[in-house]
Length: 314
Image (cartoon, rainbow, N blue to C red):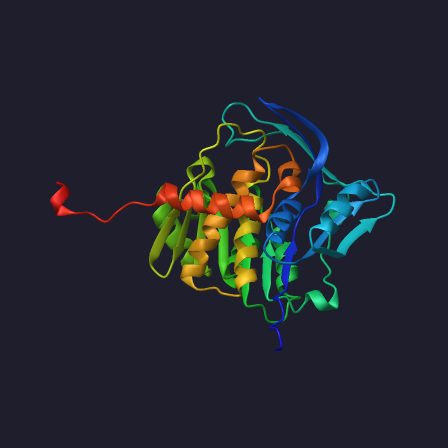
């Protein structure tokens, strides 16, 4: 019997070295970047084609780790003599708010995503949180994807609004947090904001709510996924990227973009985010396995389950 080929999943975004301090501890020059977090999360479900840029200072062990997770690094540019994008920041006890201390774009400042020929036929495309002009460059290079998804942030909403709107016109799914959705649309209502974003272009809008879960808006309906109750949160960096990677990785693994599949994908995305925050950088992902992922998926189902209303119980 001839097996159906596994759909190609392309992820484009930042690769970085992060220095992060939280009330729990600190990590220095740790593996970070939206593309790294999302690619590793997605790789538990689907092979990944990664496009990004690093300097020659990027540790070989990080490349080896990424490669070991079924992530194709053909599209990763290594600039000899260049310095990798670096970010440093800290979190107080409000772990939803990251405080930036320093940002050094380094080689990322001149990044131009050029897709290898076999990447251009990707079936699933995730444009991680990068300059909307770069996201447009990628959209102009892919040939006929089944599904495209983008992430963004307040910096691009403020400084690159016109380019961001062009991206939103062309993607199938937009991922934002609740504050970004309100900022983009100028409304305080998350529900209204999601509907207005859908009017721009994406058929599906996902609103990330950090420790309060995530919302999926599709076909005039919305689905709410809870967060997982954790006793210890070490480092929330990359949680949103891990969510996005888990979400699109699951869809690619099933090659199914129905609403039912997307609802499951939201939960799997939430599962991956919940594991990510348990340790600094991508350290928790190094020890994670499919059994643990499926067990926590079931735990999410148990948390959200309730019986139908019965008049006899009143």
